Length: 85
Image (cartoon, rainbow, N blue to C red; front, side, top):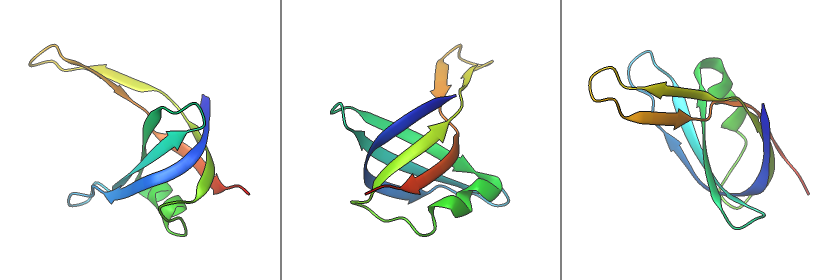
């Protein structure tokens, strides 16, 4: 599990059919960017957030290798996110 703090730059709804998902783009305090996916019921954690909010988010790791192309993906599913002052 990892923890990220920073400012929300964008919230995108990537839901397709029954697959619910939001991607939250966070500019970290170290001047990098992190893109967290909140999937399924965890998507609701983003409902009261907006661009510009300072947040702390917990995430897990879900890296995969494509069976077709061999391309590696490093997914970061969000577990929790909350505003901080």
